[in-house]
Image 1: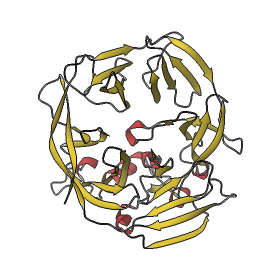
Image 2 (image 1 turned 180 degrees about the vertical axis):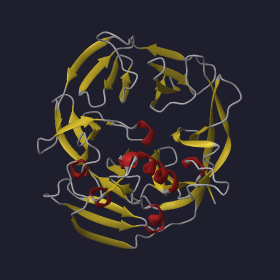
Image 3 (image 1 turned 45 degrees about the horizontal axis):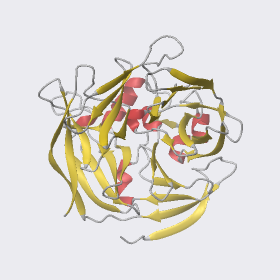
Length: 385
């Protein structure tokens, strides 16, 4: 893949602060049709009556060389440890719902560092809790997170959009609400990610400004929140549902690399008027094109970017479509972010909102299952064309 264009300019529409413009490099990528995905089989994972068949917030961990899907269960307020290999026991860590060790079912951020260090961060509440393997409280403290201008930020995670925090050895990268009123323009004039040092208890960096399209008169509702993907090179990729491009950041560096894809221009989303009602947004969500998550596959050294194509709001019989009736694409990119192939996903059969990668391949949740004691995924493997 050859890079066709390289330009360096002052980024006025996508800056960390509008008064402190960042330098942006633009790299234009063209597609090559070299690779594809093959749905090799269905992968059945046995679950028990306490487990859920679908998790909107989960983590992949390994214990004693056994891979586990660690899902936050909002119904029973627990962490479910579900082995991805047969022959191992499912475990559950039930949290208290009252008292100092209580965990809220509407929790937005939960991360297991070890069995004795489970961190929870409540959406907008600014409370950090650390729990042990028995679900007992070890430490709890409040933290007011402020950006470099002193503006207060509020932790958030939209797990179904892949907007999870990234926990590094020395810092945490937390997605935040730049403002509590998501319809107001100030929300889109600030950075989205705070780099928080839990030892120093301070914000040491920030990045992830909204593109210009979000700063204008239109509104995107749930399509406003970006996806954060760390790279093997130590940089961070920020993608927005309405923006076909990919923004690459390096901590402590002012230059932002904007990866431009002319073939994705059809996914540019104009949003709706900020004064429109919820039904108009739902209709727009169903009919317009937008991107979902960007996922790195360390085993095959590629990225997968999920995208929903535009479609008619209603079918020929007058019934309204859903977002999953549209054509869904999985774009395959190499480590240089050059596109290497496209796969058309049957979103009626597979749910792209619940996917992950393992040594076996790309797992995508399969909507049908034969028994209640099953969680079923389609297993997709990467192949050369």
